[in-house]
Amino acid sequence: MTQAAKTILVVDDDAELSDGIKIMLEHKGHQVIQARDGKQARELVDRIHPDLVILDMMMPRMGGYPVLEHYKDRKDAPPFIMITANEGARHKAYAELLGVVDYIRKPFPMERLIEAVERGLSQGPPKA
Image: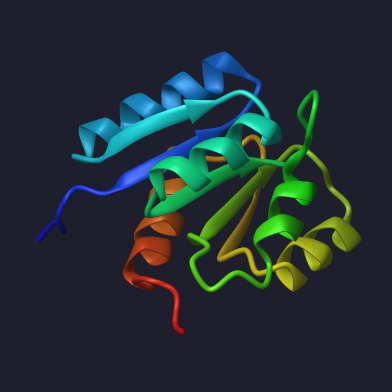
């Protein structure tokens, strides 16, 4: 059946997409917090310790890569799913090197994101 509600941080400067993801995840029983850029995302990750972060690659102020770089070697880092409109294979390889649990190119079907979220949440807390 479904697992206990988790806290998920959605980080995207596209309000329409972010709101759509929020509605879909709340319908699945999760608590969703939103950020519009990487700077705000880092503040929220450190303050609320979400169970999972869905992170856009390209945003104003601070994009997704500096966020991933910041948490790369931290044992308390949540799992990250990167979403992006970027087609480059090097970008995907770098995101995977930084530890993302999934890399999803926009536009994507919501079912694809739900599968990635469930997989990311099932990994449990970071291993020490």
